[in-house]
Length: 433
Ligand code: MEV
Image: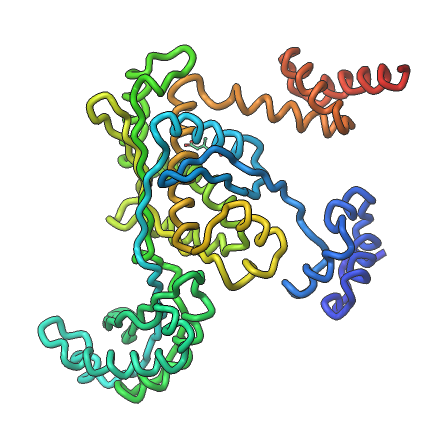
C-alpha cells in the first residue's frame, strides 16, 4: 500500500479523507476517535481549514480565583502542558491574598503597512521629513477619508483611522507608509488588511511608484496591557522558606531575566504558557500574539523578561507589560463553539477586558513558576502530573488513573514498567470484586 496521500486529498469529503488516512497510515481506532470524536463537529473543521481531516482535542481547563480589577474571573485555557492550569490557579490564590491584580490597557490601535517601490524620491523625502510635516499631513487627510469610506462601521463604533507615518528603508529603497487604526473589539487582521489593500492606489497616486505589498504588521507595540499585584510579605507563605527570603529571590529572578537573554526566553515562555493557552481557548491568533510579545521583549535591542518584581515597604510588587493583539469578536472567535464557551466563562464584554485578563494571567503564571523555581524547584510538582500520564499510558482509565498515579508517586519510580505493574494489579483487583 502507498504511504502517500492521493493528489486530490483536499477534494475528498472529510469522512473520505479520514478513511484514506486510516488506510494509508494504519491508524487505530483510538487515533481516529481522538482526532474526530464527534461527527457533528467534523463539518466545523471542514469549513475552518482546507484538507481538514479531524481535530486535535487539546484539554480545555479552567483556572479559577483570578481577582482582576476587583472582579473574580475564571479563565479557560487550552494547553497540552500538565502543570500550567494548576500553577495559574495556585498563583491566583496567593495573589488574591493581597487583593488581586490591577490592570490598565491602551487603546486597541493596530497598524497596516504599505510598501512602495520606485516612489518619487522628492515626494518620499517630503513625506519622511522630520522638520516639515506638511506632505505627511496632506497624505494623512486623504488616507483618513479613504479609511472612513472603507470601514464605516468601525468608524461608527468609535474606532477607525488614528494617523499615519512614513519611513524610507535604505537597504531595500522602499517607502513604508503605516496607517494606524483603532480596531475596537477585533484582533484586527481582516480590517487592517482590507484597509491596506484599498489604500494602495491612494498612496501611489500621491507618491508614484507601485506597491510591493500591503498587509498588517503583527507588531502591536501600541496595543499594550499592564498588570500589577501587591502582596504583603506575610501572605507569601511557602513551606520551607522564609517569606522575605522568598521575595528577595523572586526579585533576583526578575532581574536575572532582565540581564540574561537565554533565561529571559524561558521566563517569557512561562508567561506565554498562560497567555497563549487563553488565546487559543478563545479562538484568537496565537502566532500573531506571540510574534508581538517576543518583538516587544527585545524593544531596546536585547531580549528581556516581561515581568519585574520589587519590594515596597513590606510588600512584594509584581508587574508586567505586554502587547495584547486579542479580539473578542471576529475570526474564529464568534464561530467556534469552544471559543464562544470560553468567552462566556470569562464573563467579559470587550477585547480590552480580554487584554487586561491576559496581562493578569501572564503575571500570575510567571509569579507561580518563579516562586517554585527559587524555592523547591518545579520538578517535584511536575512528577505528580507525569504519574497520571504514565498511569493512562499503562491502560488505566476512569477512577483508576488517580489511584494508580498516587501509587506511582508514592513508589517514586516513574517509568512505564512500574506504572504497568501498578495498573495491572489495580485492574485485576477491580475485576475480582
Ligand atoms: C515551563 O513550561 C515553564 C517554566 O520553565 C517557566 C520558567 O522557567 O520561568 C517553569
